[in-house]
Image 1 (cartoon, one colour):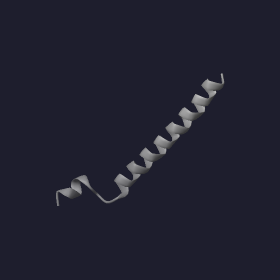
Image 2 (spheres, helix red, strand yellow):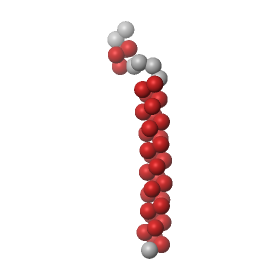
Image 3 (tube, rainbow, N blue to C red):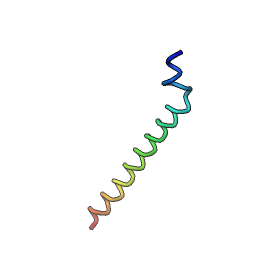
Length: 41
């Protein structure tokens, strides 16, 4: 039952995974927008 200390259902890992994917997508969008802006200028 020691595994329950590290893993308590899918709430934690799923939340971390969703947060990571969303932050990664937002980073790509920001880099694309700033990249186009710097290229146009």
